[in-house]
Length: 117
Image (tube, rainbow, N blue to C red; front, top):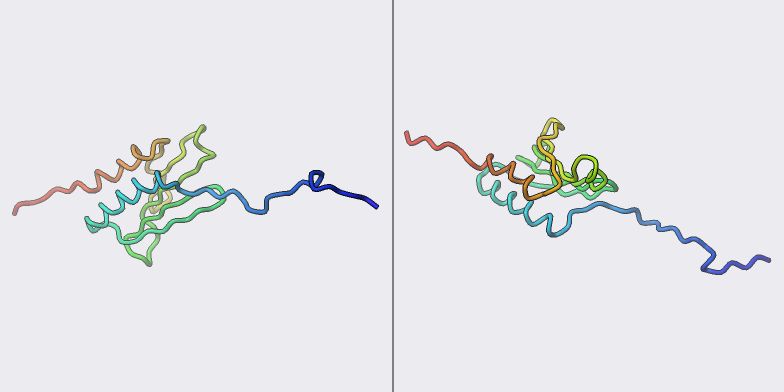
């Protein structure tokens, strides 16, 4: 008869590590989202928390593909950069380790020329 003590048995975690946005990351993202909604550019968003990436997707219309994806990939923080802005055609538009600097990409989308005539 074998006796196993609890300390001898390795307990594996059945819950996988999931990457998600922190509140300090969501605040500037939702701020720029609100500005773009007020400008009439964006209408809907979706948030995904997966095993290796967290994604904030922006939609012009609900039934379409996302026009922008803001991705958080912590495993790339030392090699390339942790945050990415990906366009509708899966092209990386901007990348960086500072989210607030990365989100400045959308400020130029808010500036429009106004014709007086």
